[in-house]
Amino acid sequence: MATLISFISLFLPLILIGILFFVFWIMMLVDSITRKYKNDSEKIVWVLVIIFLGFLGALVYYFVIYFNDKNKSLKWFWWTVLILFCVFIILLILLGSFYFSV
Image 1 (cartoon, rainbow, N blue to C red):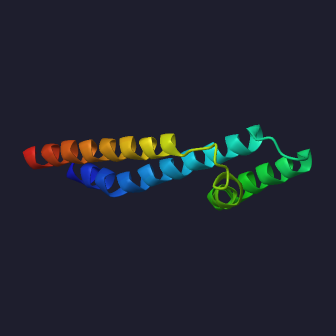
Image 2 (cartoon, rainbow, N blue to C red; image 1 turned 135 degrees about the vertical axis):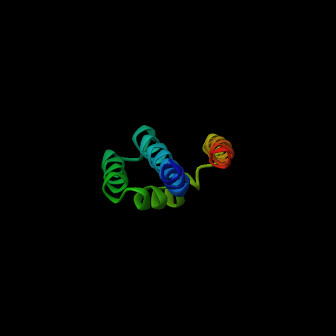
Image 3 (cartoon, helix red, strand yellow; image 1 turned 90 degrees about the horizontal axis):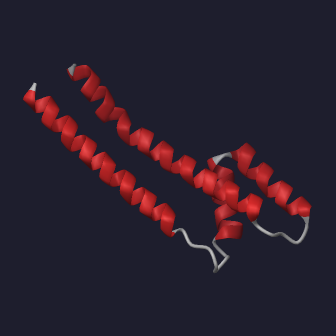
């Protein structure tokens, strides 16, 4: 039982970071699909870049296109980060109390 708890506490931060990367990737993919471009080929190129390069493509799209748009905001992304961080802390407290009670 202790090995399961140590396994979960070891890989939980990696899982949460992976979830954050995935949420960011989805957010940039949706933005690239719904954004109005000057021509359709630019939209196709950005969607393909984000799909095939994954998180790196989403990061490039963020700094080249999304960051320069004054109408967009990443508030909900940071709220997601904050909520996942709080869930992580609660899980660590629960796992720690369960580990020390056994």
